[in-house]
Length: 171
Image (cartoon, rainbow, N blue to C red; front, side, top):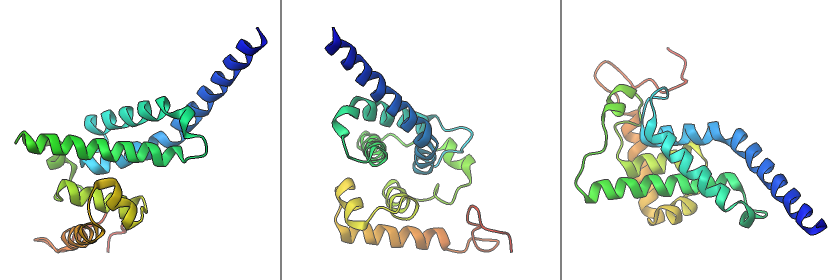
């Protein structure tokens, strides 16, 4: 009887830990997913599906994570799922949904899927080049080239002047 009570207590404790993690990291993970999908923040169904999948996967693996970083686990799942979805769409020759991209007005909307993945991982998430390469199944050289090309694309002046980066003060 006592063993069953302890087991139930441990499960409740793990559930509370996961709930606290999801509450704390959910917003940041949703922002990450929204950057990847290039959807507007107020209309991001693909990003929300990625978030739910990443959190469900992390919840299922919660016991096995032990001392591992649950945020990194969820982020990696989100990134791999986004990349896999994009690969399946590309192989099927079905265009990615573009309505959100056209409405978003984000500087990332004009980047390819791989460019967005690399830029978001390297510059937004601070993931090391070799980690990003391993996660995406690319060489470090390819990650470096994609990042440099994407940054150049984002910073390239458009008609009407330079691109206004999100969060930048108007000049």
